[in-house]
Image 1: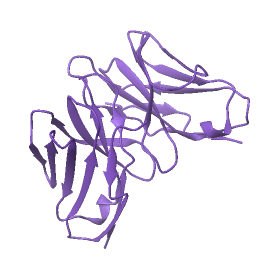
Image 2 (image 1 turned 120 degrees about the horizontal axis):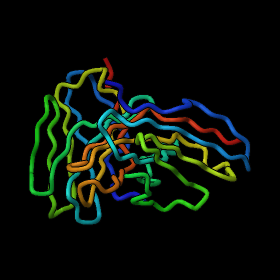
Image 3 (image 1 turned 120 degrees about the vertical axis):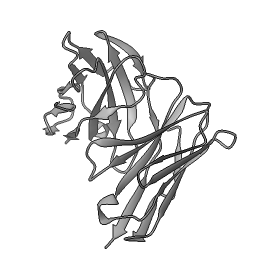
Length: 111
Length: 113
């Protein structure tokens, strides 16, 4: 079973626009991570936010975490065609433990 | 510095057969995890190996087994293949200590006919 549910399942935007996707989870966590997957191949780690953090930035990425609502959001600013991919949130109950993934958000950035 | 490498990239098998997938972790990593990803879904955790032993296991039947070698590389074996085993199999490596962030290989696409 999957811990996280992502919303929306698919997103289509124009280049230059911002893309926001949300992730909800069910149990307590140590950290939450976001990964990107291009064309159904390997996943690439984007950003990790710990349970005691509320917001984190990395380049054009901004992640928020609300542990009281058990939810997180990923914002990609000024999107590019190269951002077209599937984005997955994954939770980890303790460092070194398995990752539990959501179903993903498929993002299409149109040039 | 090579990342996580998996072989083969594609594989076609028939029902009832057995398959072995291979993974070499990123240099400096000692922990290997395997995930199964069905089309259109998120990856599902199969198991994790550390110090040549299975440390954690997901909700997969005993037909799924694995091994880790002294050089930290790993194999995933699936016996008595079912049509539902068709999926992308992803290997991920990490290091002990923090061990939070995973590095993924490009996967093996298994098709069971």
